[in-house]
Length: 411
Image (cartoon, rainbow, N blue to C red; front, side):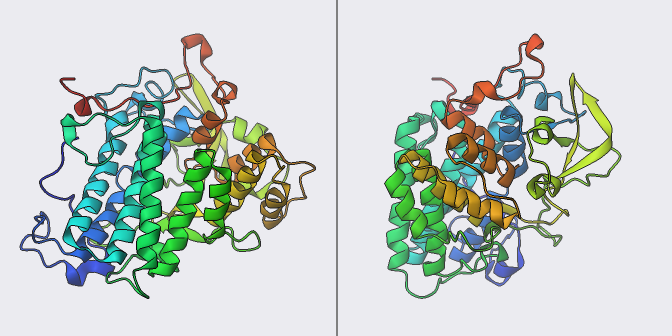
């Protein structure tokens, strides 16, 4: 990975503007960057290529299709292959994740404050997790991030590093005092002190432990998070957007009633839904016209987001309750208590039984387009059951994105 001489251009979100005291705020040097500007830059950078990430994992996971007439790769490369290690689809999200990781490394060099450490290591772990979600069996690069001199770590080693970072961050947050010495955006509202940010950290740790099959560790972490089976299912931490100068809009939003909508849910999302499930009706607009593109079709416009500046979830309570169900299933239980808590929150009758298939159904409809479906099906060896609408053309469901060519050049 080519480490940048300069941190990524910082979006001037209002919470940090007074601290951006750079000679040139459009290209600040690492020497002149403040802790606040690096925190602000990390938050802003997490949104970089976020839409490409969500479109990528939802396309290969057959959660949705992206019908983009200007770029056939979304229904060609992602659905049919091969995935091009030198192409935009592969490298865009990777590059964005590692730019944020660079910001986090700079934060750790800039300050020995425990609050800074807790924030930086948590965000670094989260960005590594997103990269690993995509690259999967191909692994990712972990510290010390020596560019082309370092090889990707294995999937197992990467998970171990992510878990270590989260645990180190948790310990740092315990020693960070009552408040941070920097401000976070409204996406962290309610999670903007060391104690409450730790609940976010433990939520991510619970997700990672479930991915690693460490069920007891997952239950412990979830118990230290903000998980509440009787609470608001939308409580959580979010990417936020705005219309101000230097800010950004939600790249996933499209008006579902526009003359042409690019991101369309897979038709199986309708056929597999329970009658009257509000998780379906609130996230889909059934259009009168069916879009037919490149041998694929759908009339289900995605309506998860209601406007161009709606937030995008990083982690929500609803996921955490279902992760607890998953951990209990992993330990030999049925997860039914947590499954039915989620169903009750949506006005649905209790499920008759729990277990893995019921859990995957609940996660599919509760967490639609939040980046989980492909990862979940892959973890349980179920990608073969995902739809393959153009099998006659040789389409396939990939399990891993390749390492970008620029990361392996000359090797």
